[in-house]
Image (cartoon, rainbow, N blue to C red):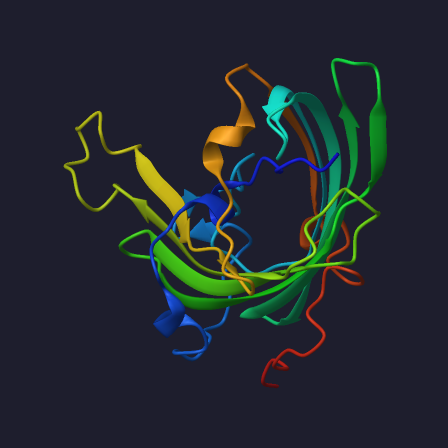
Amino acid sequence: MQTSRSFSVRHSMALPLLSLVMAAAPCLAAAHGFAGKRYFPATLTFDDPFTQDEFGFLYSYMPNAKSEDGDSVDTGSLSVDYAKSITPGIALSVGTAYTHLKSPYGSSQHGFDNIEVGGKILGHINESSESVWSYGLDIDLGGTSSHGIGESFTTYSPSFYFGKGMGNVFDSSSYLRPLAVSGMVAVALPDQGQIPVNDRTGNSVGGLLQLHFNLDDVFPNSLGKPIFQKQPKQ
């Protein structure tokens, strides 16, 4: 029994952004998560636009998801991800998930999902306009999972991240001034030409629970430091 996983937003959008990958030089990162006075946090469904040291867990549960055979399957998954800044504007990441599948007939299957590696480059931060954007590439390595859990093919997902605050758009007396918009657009490119079928995720309500550590805040002088960074001028 093999089930179609509930893909996050970065795997479910279908807008080609290949020209963005490695197309611009990275810039120096500002304070973690901030563009000027605006803070852009990571969410349960997509990452923030910044490059930093992070370590996080995400638990998801989806009842009545559809398997490739059309059967209903209860799917629970605990994901773990680690991101490491190489420079203040470039970060690499690695992650996987432990998945448990249970059919209504009582049979169950569990094991590790495919390993996913990725990289992100910070494109630009504008403090005065409270805006930021970055781009990256995630690779789901097919065949690295436990038997029957993950796909056998590899999927490449170029992505574009953005954030924009409204502090410089509206007058200081406007109630819209505190608003901000952030998001991510990505496309999934399987190496076997297979596109995930989104209607297999079922019609029930599931849940997500996240535990996230910003290591550059917790360990600013050790694990949270970029491997390479410019030394301050004397």
